[in-house]
Structures are given as C-alpha cells and as structure tokens.
Image 1 (cartoon, rainbow, N blue to C red):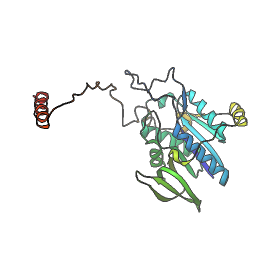
Image 2 (tube, rainbow, N blue to C red):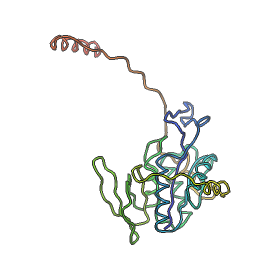
Image 3 (cartoon, rainbow, N blue to C red):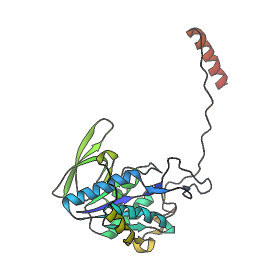
Image 4 (cartoon, rainbow, N blue to C red):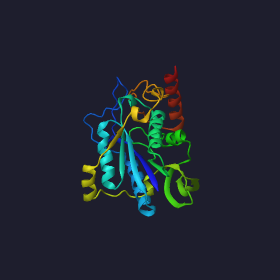
Length: 260
C-alpha cells in the first residue's frame, strides 16, 4: 500500500503574528513544529503500512527550514521525504497550495491513499486536503476518526459529525483528512533519529514539477489578504439595578442615546 502523508511546518505558538506590510506570518524568532493534526495523519499512515505493507512518503511545502519537519517524520518511521520549495511559491493561498502539492503527488506516480491533518494550526482553513482531492479528481473524506476496513481497493471509515459519526465507504485512491481522535502519535525511536540525520531529502521546485506560473504564488491565488488589523477593545459593560420597570426605562434611554 503506497501512502502519501502531507504535513506542514507551523509556528509553535497560538499567538500567530502577522507582518502588517506583507500580510504574511512572522516566523523569525518563533520555533517551528509539525502541525499537530498532521502528526495523527503520520501515525495513521505508519499503522496502515505496518498492517498492509508498502511504504509511506511524506511531503511538505515550505521554505528550506521545513526540512526539519521532514526529518522528524523520518525518525517516526516514514520511508521517503520530499520538500516542495521555491521562491515562486511564496504567497500561495490554499487553492494554489493544493495545486502544487497535487502536482508533486502526480510526479510521485502510483499511490493508494493520501492522508492530511484536518487543518493547520496557523491558518485553520481545513481547505488544503479537499483542494488536493479536487486537483487530482479523486474522492475525499474529511474529519475521519477511524479507518474501519481496507478491502478490495476501497476503505470504510468513520467520519466525525457534530453529533456522533457517519460511516462512509470510498474507492481508492482517496484523500482523508483526520482528527485527533483517530490515534495517539508515537515518539521517534533512537534508531529512527539516527536514520533521519543521514536521510537524503529530495527538493522539488517549479522547474522539477513543471508548474504553470499563473497558478502558483500570488498570481495563482484567488484569495488574498488585503488588510490585517486588531479589533478595537470592547469597553466595560454596565449593570442595571433596581425594579424591572425602572431598569427597562433606563435601558430604553441608553439605547436611544446610543442610536441617536
């Protein structure tokens, strides 16, 4: 079973800072980690490999420093790692990112399953996994909490809903985005860490992927951040006291003052 896991390197903080001039993330001085939800996708890929055989390939799109995330994935047990990196990719939104990643997956060739975390902690869009599915024109199932069965070139999964879950069967190849309820990620082994240090990371850019320049970066991004600002701080509220009729009269007066 050939499994591809897409991961992203994100800032290790919930306080994401934005450069007001470029409207991009400020990464300088902030430690980076593998997106937490992607860790569950990695673990599930490794479990499927252990059960059915095959290999797990991990890919990420980002700056050269994203290589660190790939080496961590190798230390967990993945077989191959590919870094998708090029200055031409800067400013790509989720749609352009999906196009770039899907092009890398096509270059890899035969695959049975693509796994992603449900969303990234720095963007919270949950759009890249479905975007890959759209560009590759293959089925997708989002918010997967359990893979029940893999059989006859198809799989059956449990998809998390607001109340309970639904069972879906889909043909392969397919894209799954997973939630944290699916498993508990393993820790890297000492042997895995040694292997990760020596592993060769392939780097693919625009030239290697033969991408349409009008579909990547800012040019290929139909959504763009126009302005970033901090909402005005709310002023303290007012508590009305007294009889109900008196409070109603006072409230009506306050509302009139606010409107007029």
